[in-house]
Length: 128
Image (cartoon, rainbow, N blue to C red; front, side):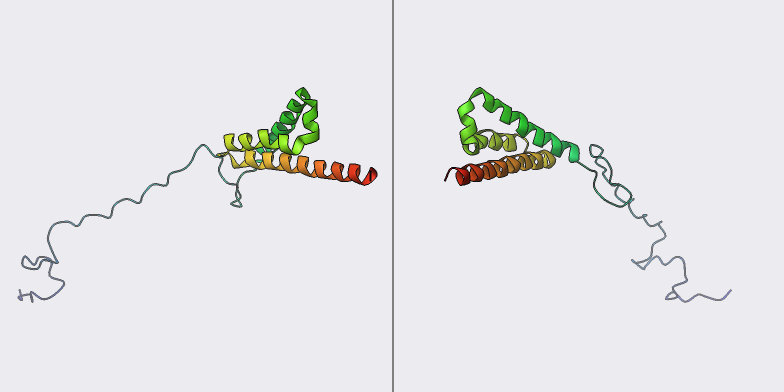
C-alpha cells in the first residue's frame, strides 16, 4: 500500500492540522421562528391590511353622540367651534393608540367644522 502525502486534502485524519479534526462539526443553529401577531387579522392574499372602516365609523358616531351632549347647553351650539375642542381633544387623547378610531374622530370633527363654516357663511351672507 503506498504512503499517502500528509498535505493531501483527501487524507481523512490529520492530527496536527488545527483546521481539520476528526470530531463531527456542529450543525448550523435552526432558523429563528417568526413571531406572528395573533391579535390582528392576517393580511389578505394581495398583501393588503384588513379593512378597519368599522372603527372609523365608530369614531364618527362618537363625535355625533358628543354633539348631542350640547343639547344640555343650547347656547353651546352658537359656539360649537370652541365647544368641540372641549370634547374632541380628550377623545383623541383617549384613543391615541387606536389610529382607526382617531381617524373617525378627526373626520367627524372636520365635518362639523365644515358644516359650521358653511352655515356661518350662509347666515353672514343673508344678513348683510
